[in-house]
Length: 201
Image (cartoon, rainbow, N blue to C red; front, side):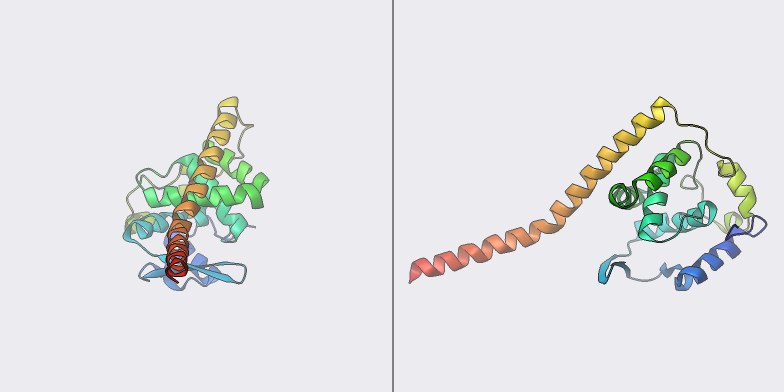
């Protein structure tokens, strides 16, 4: 059974999505975004670029019905990569990170979502507006090709999946390297200062 009725407007369906996930209006005005990796909270800044992308991302959750669990975010990340994030560069980054995590946590789901994306479209090239939110869920699903059962993947789809899997792994490794670099530099500095202090004595 669909969580979001085809005759519902995107605005009403998005409100239901916010309520189901305890998002309190989407959090678009918040300065920071909080996620959890099990018991560990993860905070990152809620930039203007992220807000622009996440307004569409939330509508994509409604249209595709992928959940907001780690597995679900990996699936919608793979779907959005396959359909393309246009000029939403922060969307590209977050989706590629989710894609990489999904290759470990949910590889089959990520593969299916990517192949679904190869045969459908998203809203990232649209203009976010009240007119868009007033449209019916079912109409937009049909327009984007989300009402159809995907056909078997072609060889080009398989190659695209391998390519984007490698890209996502590279982005994931590079992001962690950049995040850990300040800690490595700090550790080296502490080691050098401690070593010099020992030499002084």
